[in-house]
Length: 208
Image (cartoon, rainbow, N blue to C red; front, side):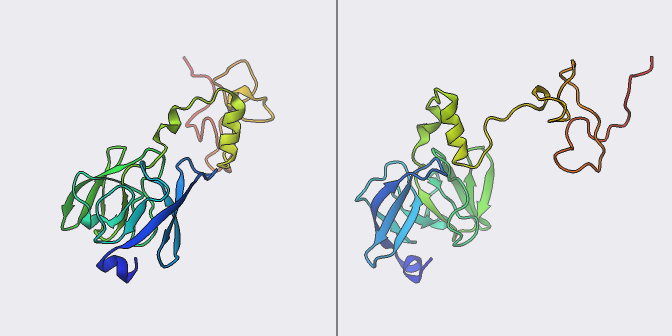
């Protein structure tokens, strides 16, 4: 946060709204009068040409970035900083928002989408509003190929085959006529081998 942001606010103009393949929410490119360019996660309702403000004295409007200590209780915020000037670490996915619950001497309480409440320092900044593209999770995939490319952009392996559907050479759960199987594995087995019954107290059939 610059000195100008601490004492007042800096005006930016939204120049472009972009899609990044590695994330679901859109990002917007904003530019200040001095020529500084910043990329930030777009809030729902933002548009090209909109003026957004960064700073302690910025109005509490959608898209503006303010310290949590200056945001009224009950306001929906997103992209919250966990530590001062870290750029935002919490509530960054599409359609996500947290609610400012209360201001206390120990910090600002925010309620997450999960229902959990976390305390943040008053100086941590947050964007006012909900993250855009909230309906993306309702979009049907229609075919497996679309899902494959979606996960590939995020470096996630898809599809993920169940171990018990594999052959014995490919996975400890594979093969056999007992689908719940899986051989016992030692406590000190390396990662990848440690699946199924880990370090069982006993093996074999139970004595009558």
